[in-house]
Image (tube, rainbow, N blue to C red; front, side):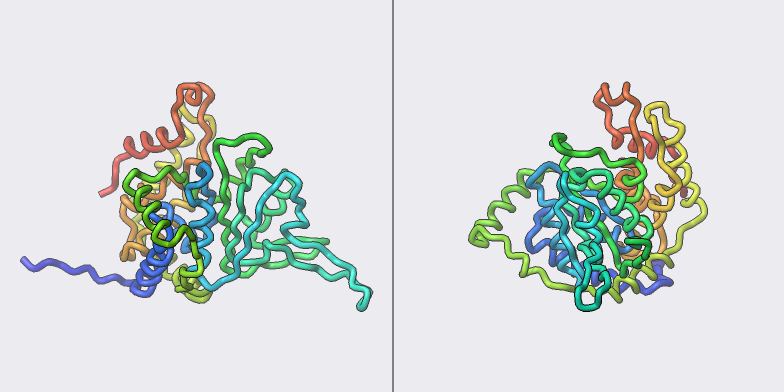
Length: 325
């Protein structure tokens, strides 16, 4: 019996080459963290922002910076601090003595990829200014609205351990991040390779060795291809059941919103395209479900005291729901 070769209805060859090139460039310096890199690329293709959480020194900021270098688009890095004001990130109006008029000087949010270090260190006023940009891709100053150029992606880092001088991000803002990626310590094998590579580079990290392999027009083109990826009705129902179960779980005080369902849909389509398919499978949905949901649900106080995590509950929910065939 002849083996059937499936022919994609959407040409994904260019997208696959671009994804492989991005991974190759980032891996010139980053060792391991394959899932993190995969999810970051998926977020860009799905037009979503990412929250990266991990202890200091696990290459959160470096990975985000390297990823931005693989694309020839605008890049800004903002260090959030307790004294950061909204005008420090969105810009301010300055009086021009020559024209006797106020001119708006754009802040660092007017870029394409925004790396925000320690997002939970800035006060509520500054968070609210960021909030509008993240949700509506626009910034309003002095009654005038400025549209942000596409792509506009916020990659934000936070340290889960240090709580002094930090502010808890509001649930409404957390809901705007398509993924929360938790970066763990490397394995012994990977740590050995990190040390070996660093020694071979004469104790330096030269990010200039990372080349640009994609531009803004290509990002737009590949996003169009991702949106054309097919998903069966039974898989749409599967996504809805997963999210619905977060709202009917005795271990969870707060379940996920419909925005979570849409995030799973768009990101699973991105993962499918990255893996060379123009159709979504249950495995694509299972791969993105935890990073999409983990920051959108809140455990009951009893479960927190027991040491149970949101990851555990999400895993239980996924295991209980029958996988569509």
